[in-house]
Image (tube, rainbow, N blue to C red; front, side):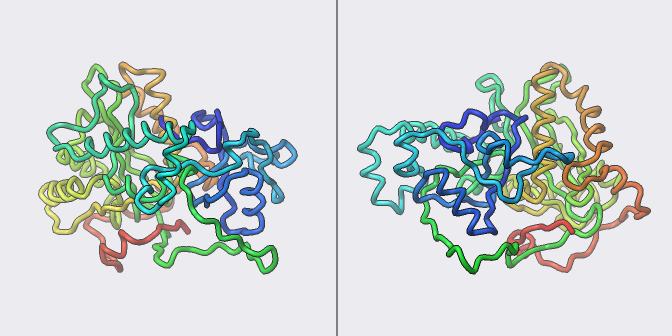
Length: 377
C-alpha cells in the first residue's frame, strides 16, 4: 500500500508494524521544537501528518501500557543530516500555480523534485480511473499488484490525503510560530461538528480494490464501519457496480437496522446511483448514503486495522482471500479495540438497543453533514 515518507529519507514509512505519532498541533511550543529538529523550512504539518517511532530516542517512549505512547516531553531527535533537508522543503507540483519559486526550483535537479514527478503522474492516472463508468471498474490487476480505496476525484485536490497516506510532508507552506509564552494545550474542534453518541448512528462505507481475483471471481471488498462501536462489516464483491454495493448495504440494514446515514468518499455520481438502488430495493424515499470526503478520518484506527487486514489477506491467501475474509473480520469485531478499549461486539450487540426498522430522521441537512467533522463521544 503506497504511503508518503513520514520524514526525509525515512525508510520505515511503508512498514505496517511501525508505530506512528501525530504532531502536537495543539501545543505550539512543543510543535515548534519538533519542527526545529526536523530542519525543514516553509512547511506546516496538518492533522494527517505523523512521524514514526524511529525518530524518537528510547527515553521518550512509554512502553508500560497496552499501547506504545510518547511521553509528555517527547521530541523527535533522530533525523538524517543532509544539506537538502536543511535548505527547504521540496516543491509539490500540485501547488505550482501560486508559486513563482517553482521556476527556480525546476532549474535545480534535486532528488526531491524528480521524485515528485512520478507521484503526480500516478495521481493523474487515478483521477482518470475513478471517472470510468461503472461497467468498467477502475484499476487493472494485470498491470498493478497494488490496491487502493476508491475515492472521489475531489480528494486529489485537497491539501492532505486521508489515513492511508501519512504525508503532505512535502507541501511547502508558511509556518506561523506561536510565542513561547501564552501557549495553550486546549484542543480546538472545528466549527462544524456532529457528535456520534450511540452505536449504529453514523457509518462509514469504503470500497477497496482491485485485489487479486479469487477463484470465485471476487476483486473488491466493501467495508461498512460503525464509528461508535468500531464494528466492521466486510463483503467480497466481483465488481464495484452501484447495484452490487446497494445489495450488500440492504443485507446489512436487514441485520442491524437503519443508521442515521452512511458516509462515503465514493464519487458523487456513484453515491447518487447507490441511493437510487437503495430507494428501489428498500422502498424508501430518503438518501441513505451521503458523500463525505473525510470519511476515513472519523475513525483512523479502525481504518488502519482494515487496511492491515486486507494487506495480510492478499499476502497470505492471494487466490482465495475471500474465503478467509469472514474469519479476519470476526477477529476484528471480537477483539478489544485499541482506541476504545472495548470489544465492538459488546458495544453494538450487548446494549439492548432495538434495530431501527425504518429510516431515521435527522436534525441536520445534507450540506451540514458534508461540511462537518464527526466526533465520537
